[in-house]
Length: 89
Image 1: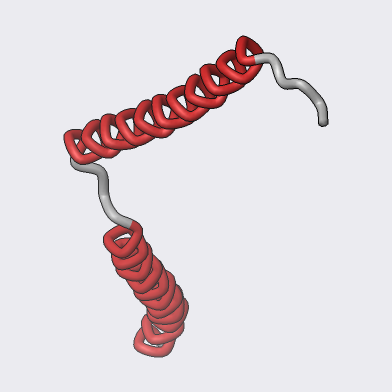
Image 2: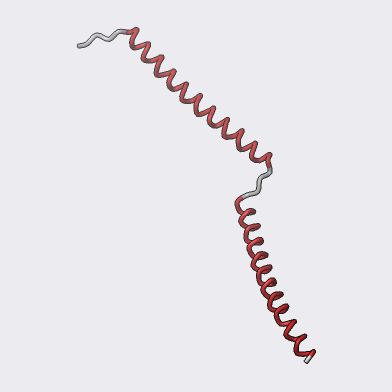
């Protein structure tokens, strides 16, 4: 039977307790930091992903409409001189 040293047993117990306390403190610090960052983001009043996607869809639709109207204006302007030429003949 091996003899155990009570001093080493006590030291091992203290180290185990210290590691548990350090781990708990680390988790608490992480949770506090995450809460602080979430609070800062909430204070910034940033747009959500859904809002950005909705605005992107609106902008894309508006751009398509502008392009269609530009093509129509070009077509009408191209037809205009031809009509003038016919009326002068």
